[in-house]
Length: 121
Image 1 (cartoon, rainbow, N blue to C red):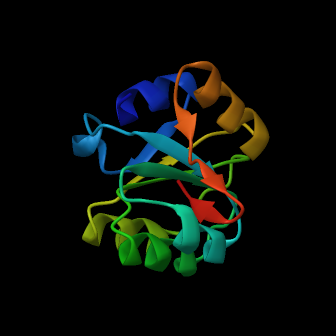
Image 2 (image 1 turned 90 degrees about the vertical axis):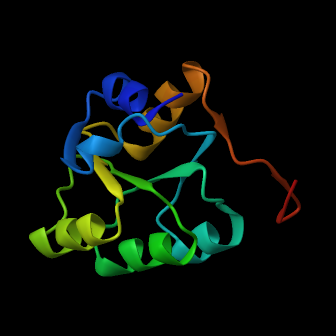
């Protein structure tokens, strides 16, 4: 699945990184806990979150994440968007909740990150 596919499924608005919508995504991870993102997400995943603070971008930088989707219609500040631009991170925004967004992606074939007892498999 590509970021462009995800954009359509979630009726999402592209805030930055439109030139990267052809990137392939292998899985999705929904969380507001950046410690979980650091522990379980790999760089071919897309992050869905309701947090709109700079820590989200910094976390994405640390694990080379290339896409973030802000849910619940939360629009990040211009500072966050500029941080995403500088790091070639595609930032999308959808009005769907985190639960619904993840469900729609799963329903359309995008798997979640698999882990067992706190360890990725």
